Every structure is written in C-alpha cells, then in structure tokens.
Image (cartoon, rainbow, N blue to C red; front, top):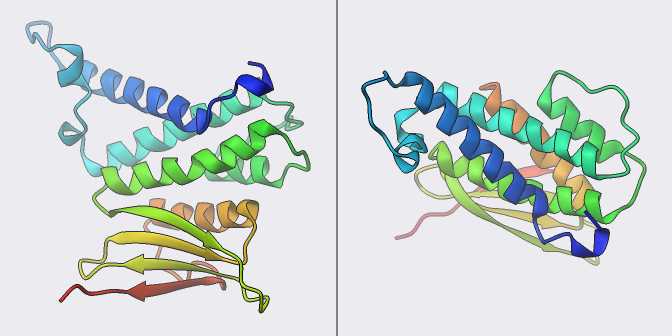
Length: 191
C-alpha cells in the first residue's frame, strides 16, 4: 500500500476484520452440521465466554501486528510470542513512518474496543500539553468503575501508547495496579 493512500486508523480496521474472522471461526466450530446459522449469527460476541473473548481479541491484535510488519519498513527480525511484547517492540522501533504513526493511532481504538467488548467502559481519548512541564496519564472512571476517558497531559503519542499498552497487559493478566508512575485514576459521579 502506498503511504499517501493509507486510510486513517488503517490498522484498527484491519484489527476489526481479524477479530470478526476469529469470532466467526470460534462460533462456527461450536455448531453441529445440523445447525443452520448465517454469518451474522456467527459473529455474536455474547455467545463467547469472557476468557475466550480476551484470547480472541489478543490473537486479532497479534495478527494486526504481523500485518504491520508486512506493510511497513519495520526492522523487527525476531517476533516475540507475547503479543504485548510484540507491541512494545513496534513502539520501541527507531523509525518514523506513516505506518508507525497509524499503528499508534489505531491502538487507541483497539483498546477502546477491548474495553467495550469486556464491559469495562467505552472511553474516549483526550490529549493536551501543559506549559509547566507536567506529564501524566489520567484514567477517569464512572461510579460503576467503567473507564469513560483517558486523558494525556504533556505526553507524546508514543509514550501514551507505551503506558496504555502496559495497562492493558496488566488487565489481560488480571493484575492490579499500580499501573505506571504517570497514571492517575479519577472517579466521577453523576448525581
């Protein structure tokens, strides 16, 4: 794909295709030969238990990372078995390209999808610069402990991606915080 034709959030759309393929295969494998289900019934996320869904999502993210390697000028020669380590390698690469920028941008939507499918919230992302040199990452929770917003202050996009990837690694492995020295949690209540 030519760089000037790369669509916004290209890797997020690729992830969605990979995720849906995996969900379809998982649901199709559960059917007997007598079941007559269409493609839309087979892409039902509610029929998959939470642990299997987490695994499917992580597999789709890994597939997306592989596609990133195929399309970009990446110099990664050893592919880690751990998907989060794979993401870290991509983020640590010392190259600047539209592919890497698109991958980093797409990660926000991928992680948003992860949270939504696992009923942990549907956050939006906000970023600002603080003239005082302050840098932090704020995770805003509602009264039901769902994540409603990630707010980055004074952090570059690459650093934001590294922080949120480490947070999702911990969530995937059912580990509790502290997430990162720059991550702060804020709870809001609607009364």
